Every structure is written in structure tokens, then in C-alpha cells.
Image (cartoon, rainbow, N blue to C red; front, top):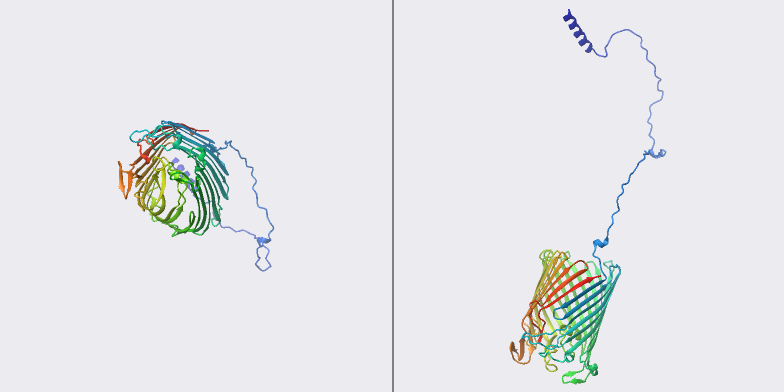
Length: 572
């Protein structure tokens, strides 16, 4: 019975769960349906309202209050003094050499200004020792002193630049080329006074097609104290020079048109014209004016790989006789391989104005009664190649071929002196030079420059190009160690120089009835070291002529042997 009741309960449970929620049943009943009203009108199309006819509706705006919290951040500050080097208005350099050679330099400059700059400098160098020749014989008193005072200024504008300078040079020395240590100092003393000033004005309109110009005015006055006797003051040389130059330029596309005008005047007077102070010493007066005209055009072609500068020079030389000269001026260069190989050719000519000042700068031991003739260069051709071997090395190799008339050569004057002074003799030459130079720079830490030249002189009358070297080499180097220690090297070497003498002797050869003395080689090396304690204080040590060779600067004029100069520099 229990088993029967259990099975019945399970069966009824399963049957109940298996039934549907809705079930159908048949039956009879009354069902009423509501009636709906009939639409009596016919159907038609109703056009929707156009949007432009709808009244404007304001957009729905969800207004929600927003709270913003600010964190306190300290404002950033930039110090320009930390980004750029600080400039000091004063710079002082003091030193002393081992051969009683004091030196001093003072510079006064304006600090950074966007519109103006001015500066003042005073430099002095003197020597109170003796000089010996190669045989260790003491020469005549060789002391000298040189003082230079200069003022510069520059006004900078967005449309023009104006700058100028005024310099005074006081240069005193002795004609020490004599083996006579007890010679009268006054009788061999000389002192030059030179005042020169330059003023430049240039426009710089930003429009590349605008007309711009540059103008320069230069003035120089030179006098000498020799002879030292006051009663002979009229026989002291006097020279005044004046130069005016102007250039205008205008660009049109890839062409730059330019035109230059120049006026050069040099007036030199020694003593009284048509008078004689002593045998071979007559008064001289030279007034020389040169007018220059130089038009030209610079153009670029082939995507600026080819550059052509073509024009000419016209120079009117009003000296003893008025002469006009015409010189072509052409320069061509072509970028062959991405600035690595750039061949170039230059052709030009010029009239170089000689002056007492220019000759004295080359050789201070000249006589002051010197005839002045302008050097004429009918042509000078340069051709070569230049470029970059890498981003650190650049090079140039070129040949120079020129015709030079009235080249000034220095000859020992045995008529008015004991061979310790020089007169100027002029000659014509065909000049050729092969030159090569290489520069290397590594991150402003190491910089090297090397220049080598082979010179050839074919003289018209003279046996040799007196005092001019056939070979000369120059090496320059700078090493910068963290802007703390700076080392500098300079080395000058020259070979095959000759001086004219008037009798046979040792190292003398006779060429075309002239005696040529072989002056030997020049090996002049200088070392310089600077230690910067900080940006304001430093010390320096210079070793000049460290090879200690008493080579001849000019005939009878050996240079000083090794010299050591030490000192300090201060910025304040």
C-alpha cells in the first residue's frame, strides 16, 4: 500500500508540472463587439511644415554646477645670465718677457645692446734688451716700443649700419743692423706716428629686390721723427692719404647687379723739392690720385650650382703722368659634387697704390726718402679646386699666375748708411704660385690649419726677387680643453731667400753681375698656453721662437732668440 501511494504521488506531481498555462475548451455564450465611427472624408496628402516656417526654439541646456580645484604650482623662471656668457666692460692683460719685454693691454667695451656698440683699447709692447747675430756678436742698440690707442663704435638699425674707428700708433725703434753695441742711440733711432680713421655706412633693406649701398671714408696721416735734429724738421717725411669708396647693388631674380666707385689720394713729401740735404738725399714730393670704376653682375645657374661674376675695372692713375687702365674681372665656380669638389677660375687686374706707410709696415728699416710708384697688375689668374672632405675638413688647391709691374724690393743702402737701412728699388716680374691649404676642426676643441706655397719669380732686371722666399709653409693649431686650458701653436718655415750685396763673400753667388747673399731658412715656432681659473681670471705663458734660431728677418737684421712671456688677464 505504501508503495502504491508513493507511485501515485510521483505520477500526479509530474502530470501537474507538465500541464500548459493556457488551455482550450469548447462552450456556448454571448459576445458583444463595440461599433466604431466611420470616416466619411476621402484620403488626401498633407504636406509637412517647412523648417524655416517653424518658430525658433531655444536649445535645451543642461545646467550643471562644476567645481574646479587649483593646485599651487611655482612659476618657472628663466635667467638669461645662465644661458649666455656675461659680458664685462673691462679687460686687462699684463705680462713680462724674459728679455725685459713688458706688455700691457686694456679694453673697454659696452655690454650687450641691440642698437649700439662702442669700445676703447690701449696696447703697449716694448723691449730693452740686446740682440746678437749668429756668431753671438752684440749688435747696435735694438730697443723698441710700440703703443696703440683706438676707439671704435657701431650704430645698428633695422635699415642701416653706421660704424667707425680712430687709431693712433706710436712706433719707435732703432736701426740696429750694425755690429756696434756702443753706437749712438739717437743717430740710429726712428719713430713713426700714424693716425688713421675709418667710417662706414651701409643700408640693409629687407626686400631682396631693393637697392642697397655701402660707403666708406678712410683717412691716414703718417709722420716720422728722423732726422732727429730739430733744425732739419722740414726734412722729416710727411704723408696724408684719403680714400672714398661706394658700392650700390640691386637683385633681380638670380642676378645681382652692382657698381662701385672709388677715389684714392696719397700725398708724400720729404724735405724741400729741388733741394739736397747731402749726397744722394734730395727732396721728394709725390701727389698721387687714382679713380676707380667697377661695374658687374653676379648670376647663378643650374639650380645655383654654377656662379658667374663678370665685370671690369677702370683705373685712372694721375701720378707723374695720367694713365688709364682697363682690367677684366671674371670669376666662375661650379659645384661639382655636393660642396665636396668646387672648381673655380678668377681673372682680374688692379692698380695698387704704394705709400710710405705701406712700405714701412713691410720693412720698418727703410730710408724715409723713398720714391713711390704704384704697382700695376695687368692680369692675375687664379684657378683651382676647393671643397669639403667631411664636416670637419675643408681644403683648397690653386695656382696663381700674374704679371706685376713696379714691384717694390728692399735693397741695403750703402750710400747713405752702413748697410743698416734699405732703399726701395722697383722691377717687373712674372709671378707664379702653387698653393694648397687644409683646415680641420673638431667641435671647437681642436683646430688645425696648414698652408704651403711654392713661389716662382721671373724678374726683368734684378737677379733675384730680393728677400722673397721660394718655399713657405705655415701651420696653426689650437687645442681647447673644456674652456679651461687652451694651447696654441704657430710655425712658419721659409726657404731660398736672397739679399743683394755689393761684394763677394761667404754664402754669396754672382748672378748677372749682381751679388746674391743666401740668407738661409726661417724656422719660427711659437707656443702659447692659457689657463682660465674662471670666466674672469686667467694666466698665460708664451714661448716665442722656441727653436731659438737667429734667422735673418732682413739682411743684417737677425731676430731675437727664444723669449718667454708670462702674465695674467682680468675681466671686470
